Image (cartoon, rainbow, N blue to C red; front, side, top):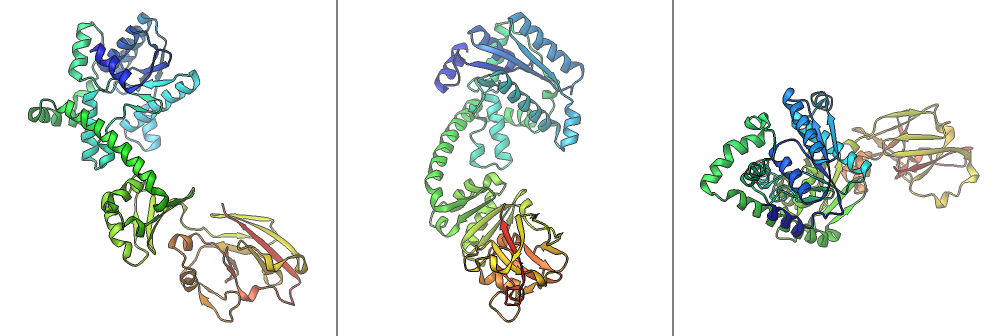
Length: 443
């Protein structure tokens, strides 16, 4: 088994004896065997152990075993105790997720502060089978078939080629002391349910199930890299993005025979389901405005494109301010305000983000708000009012653009559709004495 372990490390190019390795050791058989193997073969190792305090004296016993083993091996050891239950409650997490977040945050902190090259965990081939099954049950799609990555930046899993039975046999042969986690014997967690109730049935059907799923994970990982390469090659023709939004050309996407799958690869990580992606592709030729929601994002079909933005960025709260202020900040930028003489401005060269308003027609306060049903104004150059909704349609604005366009309001009058048009009644005229020069700076 030792040679299998060493050959896997060599084949996967995981680390070498010059690297400083931080081993995550729980006290269970898997991590204690990993510690033994790496120590025996002369790697530079330091141990980190988390005491989550969830099993009382059992948890303390785990910590004591790890500490004593490191003392015998003359290996440095970090041990930290967490109040996992309190952290889970404060952050609205399950105990499992809280423990995961606590341990990986601490491991990364140790890596940075002490200059470790890699963080090693003791996940093995049976863990891989369980992970792939969980991902399938949870509907993670093809990206979940690769299971646990052998290397993910600084996280390395050198035991993934080893089976649980091999690890136990090796521990017995080498007289390696370890502790069993009693919580692993219960079936109340999803992974334990898979481990104790599903995996035995799979092994009855296929005694080599663990090896089969390990190979599946490796093949799926290769497939995932190929898909990434393919997506990178077609992204320029499909996707436009900035820091806050994404736009996908559905017309171009529909030329691909695998359009729903491609779309899922592009937006699945934002929480959209494959079923939604199929519907989006089907709706490409339908009327604009169809919406799709994930937990954090909203996607809207708009004239042959799919617009995606975070939900938190939608809407504008009303802000009231004095026209004497120098600057006002709102949801989608800020407006600089300058009171000046009429003849000091080059009106012919105003940018689209600038507006000049007759200051004599302004009251003691102004407002910035979003659009409301029935809003209208008199666009510059017109002699009658126009519904704001019709103005937006003429400008071919998407729903997101409409929602994120601020309106500058004087009493009940919209005097500037910010970034687009001022109201005819507030334009600069021969009677104007002072000008309110406004400059909108998008965030």
